[in-house]
Length: 179
Image (cartoon, rainbow, N blue to C red):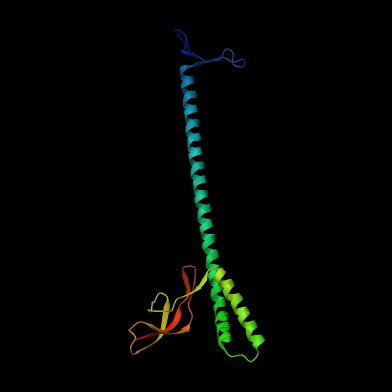
């Protein structure tokens, strides 16, 4: 840009001319106003871009958190239905251990028991171990009695099996321990 100085008129600033703007000149004061306006618009643009970036980051966090909550809810629902089916599994265990007069009926019950067990195992169900020492995180001691030749805290009998789904206990084993 070239500046012309005229002693009679305010200082003029020439801008590059286009076909549409031929003969347009701005005073220094007008040019300063235009620059201030441009700086103001640039500041607004930067703030808007910053706000949009924060909103995008918030939405990404929301989506990740929502996916996590969904997965946790699914796993909790799975544990709930498995817990509801455990009494049925216990009944099948008792029927399978009983003496049946009809061999075909007994075989059918064992087959249904095996299918139910396999289906639940595919969903992450596993039996809580009851061999060895009593662990209050895994077992529920409902009886204690002294047993000669057995050290204190050993599991003597299992009254009800305990189960876990993946790493969470859904039912503690009911056991008798040595005292």
